Image (cartoon, rainbow, N blue to C red):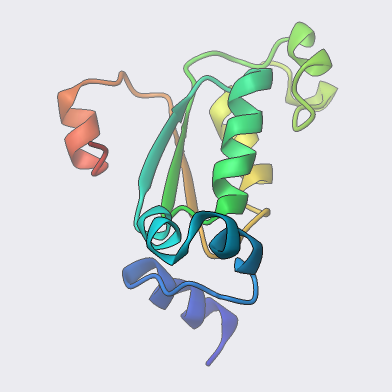
Length: 128
């Protein structure tokens, strides 16, 4: 099966790659890892702490991660956010961050948004 097809299949019915996630399964247990593999996660704010949380959730193997930020990259962001560069200044933080964060784990579907977060947004993105 091609890697693209495997990734698309894993988005529909995530199976835990026990080789990739063996350390996490050992620490958290299979049930907790299974819950994480089915989780839809929203992370709002791509400053230093937000990007670190996003990185860890993506590497951890959540099913989907939505990166949210309404602001644009500023020069001051370059000192606390290692996924931004000077060429990103003026672009939306979420859009720039997702381009690099999505490379961390091909099993995790990573998207971005700068929409207002409300009940409709949360329901449409299966965030509870």
